[in-house]
Length: 394
Length: 147
Image 1 (tube, each protein chain N blue to C red):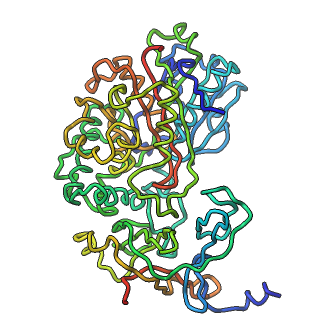
Image 2: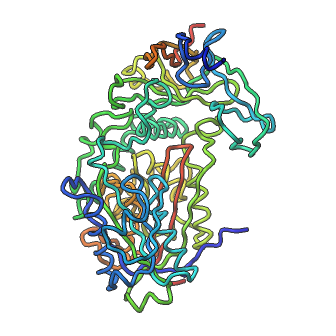
Image 3: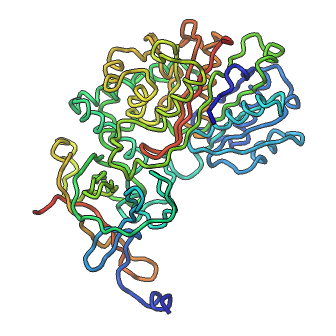
């Protein structure tokens, strides 16, 4: 038994992504049509050329009908998938495996989420608590625990630690300001971020990702067919998805400075892709910055920084757009926004643009190998996804 | 018969099944007899550490513990008063419990977090609501230990 992966057997030949943000005038149908038709056009294919579809949405619809109705799909397989905030990545994974297996020649993965008309303005999944105990650990609160735990373990003064978190949000806004599809296209000063209204100490509102509507889509084929459609496809090197046993909330061995699920997915993905030194070999990454301390911990879980040193890399600008390993060049969840089912494919959309030299003002010089990381759940109890993609085979 | 008795009982009800009110309020977990891992939810069907599915026994948990980490929540669900302190409390049995801290000033906790890490705390309970049948609903939290 082994996780063998499908290195270089599948390529993305077209992608689409709506603007993320508050689309009060659009429903999931409109967003899906927008992203899907961008993807068809990008690949130069007709809707009927696509043999099968995987739709990712956490709560904006159930069953394949959510997609087949608005797209008027002509009697083809459509599967709706859900894997919390990593739903979009799960849709892509399924579509890639479907073409890799030979079952279909061309598949679309598409994700959508319509959060802004759902009656709340935060990533609240559970029923409101009435007990003042378990449920009062809100989503921001459960992720905020990473910060004091990390600061304490590595001897970081809380104020200095807050500066590290602030710089992560600052970077992501700086990148998002260069992205015409981002929810928040504005640079924000360090001072404004640091002093933003408190949500769950030490997190302020500016440490939290944007609640957003949007959709993103990818069309995949077997790698050998890619050049029939596309001069510069991107190749799937690794896809890893792991659900943990949820020991964290109960076990005292779990110290809230890591996501074990992420460590496991990174290990699996790097083995599939043949990556031995991620800090050196990866040109850019899109990671799941739902809250700023998440991004801090992910740097270490993904092997970009040795344990206890990611905060120094943050302050040194290592992950800036101009840095050695740019992370969230498109603005990330923080600035691009987080329409849950679409986010994983939005991350891949940035890989697509960057590797084809189409990222405009935020273009990274000649990126060869990219990584996307998508997470669902909370520290100690989550699902995690890591992909590695490249501009070349081999 | 048991169901009938319950329907006419107007006594207090614990908010979660692992909070027991008698003889005095305490938490009761279940312990995997194979590997020793402890869980709160009695409905659990298997051990996430070793996979054992059969051998679980109830275990009374200590009413004293220590704060591992915490957050001061300023924005919560509709109707929940903020700010409050929510925390992970480590119990001597080796299990972690999520609960709020009471008797701790949120502003002060934020200013001086090092006074809250490792703080010895004890279980306390109080009425949090009345359910539809008029029972008092009892919730638990932890407060700084008095002794």
